[in-house]
Length: 218
Image (cartoon, rainbow, N blue to C red; front, side, top):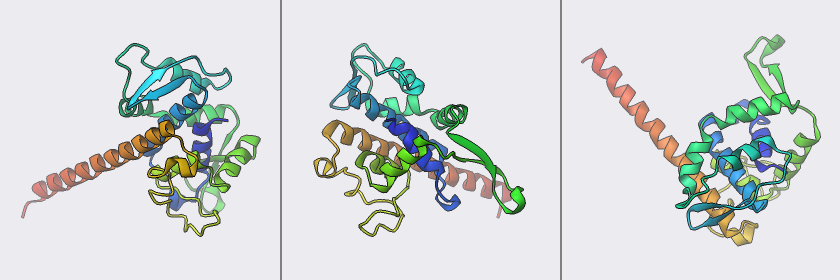
């Protein structure tokens, strides 16, 4: 089971109005990989540091690639630094890998299929597995999806699909939602990184607007 692959599939299996920013998704995918490495006992978390252990089980090329990039000499890498380093253009890497594996198909939106080309999950066991985790509100997948603004509209507690609250993601009460301390630390770091990226976007938008007003003059 690859949380990162499932998260990518869920992110593209959403209506257009819930499209996820590629930068946000890349950060969340890097966090998902780290959580999978924790589950495989390939890393442990010591405070905010990633401590490598043994290699993950063979079979997932991208997860193996992530493990190969770990900093193995102390002082070990901070989780936040890993998210930014590993997350650079990571969503594009997952799209390429899933298309190559036949997990994604290309299609065009709009009437008569003349709209822009998009990708969508193929009807495969991987998609059904991801959908099952999503519909069941599985804690890790839900928490990471929340970080990029996705909420499970199909859960039984009446969630409206606009994203779980902070408590629902397990950030405050990880043990109650099935997230252990290490995983909760990673999820919290993903949330912080996504918020930092949004702050950068807003700052650039303000700067660009001010620059345009300067050129337009009074």
